[in-house]
Amino acid sequence: MSHGHLSIASMDEESSAILKGTDDATSDDQLGNELLLFEPMTVGDLELKHRVVMCPLTRCRADAGGVHSELAVEYYKQRASDGGLLITEGTIISQEAGGQSNVPGIYSFEQIEAWKRVTAAVHEKGGFIFSQLWALGRVADPAVVPNGKVYAPSDIPFTTNANNGPGCTNLTVMSERDLDRFVEAYVDAARGAMETGFDGVEVHAANGYLLDQFLQTNTNTRSDNYGGSPANRIRLIIRVLDSISAVVPPSKIGIRISPFSTYQGMKMSPTTEIAQAFQHLLREVLSRWELAYVHIIRGNGDEDEDRESLEKLKEVIRGSRRMNTRIILAGEFDPAQAREEVRKNPFDELVAFGRYFIANPDLPYRIRHQLALSEWDETTFYTHSAEGYIE
View 1 (tube, rainbow, N blue to C red):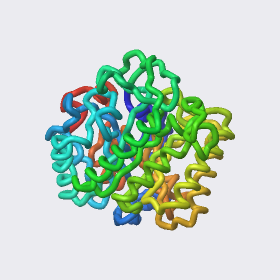
View 2: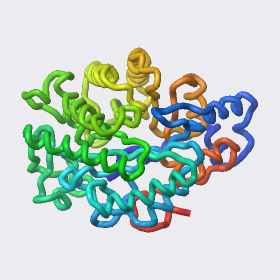
View 3: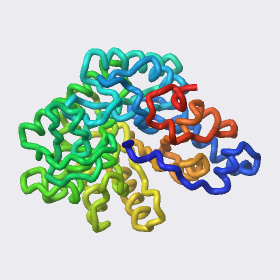
């Protein structure tokens, strides 16, 4: 199971032309818009030279202990570019927060030493890299967590687990002590990330994993201080950010959310509940910290309500007067859509790509120079070999 953003997207005629390497997609206006993607932008403490960001992408190439090999060093090095930003795949904050095989962690000595080689390789090419901090929650596979304990906000199982087996039906509803321990694990992971050489950390509060589960009503029916009202349901996210910001400057912290995703049984209803909860989250977060960025996964459907809600979330961010907090948008963008997005919002937006980066390690260069883009092979996304991973 992945983070849910690698499904094949339909492409319009223009992006298909780019994929095939024809000249049909090029005009003076489009080239002008293209260049906006390559205007410099400050993100937190970083001076980026372009706005083509690599999404967090689960690839399942770590060993059984969550340790990356030289294969991952080469993978990230190939995708690094001068002044470009990469965000790592989801990285487990502690053994009990895990629950998927062959994904990396950042809590053991061996894991941290492996990540040091990754960050050094990215920096050698002039790039920047954030570590995405991850806890799985109810979708964890009990076979790969200590004592088979799968933690969740409430006793609401999901049908499958992160290894595509049956979902855990014996969830451990998190106590206050459990929550304290997980918050401390986030802090330790964030501290480890900075000591490892990462340029910042991204708090993964998206795609139906633990923090997203606390936020949404279809996975959180608690009656304590962590359930009920939006203020209560965001409490764990606020605690995590508050604790991390004691060891990492807010200018080196991002957060990722997915208000419109149905992945792993998410997207609470009605739509007004989504708008209320996520707007409340962003207001509270940005009233406290000037983060490096807010990373939003847009809806992939044609629902007008989702598009309107996304624009309102952007308004909340801009209305916070956190002038240095940027917006990263993800969600099956092709280059043509990315150009248009940045054309409409040139002052504070970047666009994150996933599948295109998998198939095209030099994606920023190819987009800038209107070169043909290779097609991706879904069958290699989660295997354990070099094929489809490095060139």
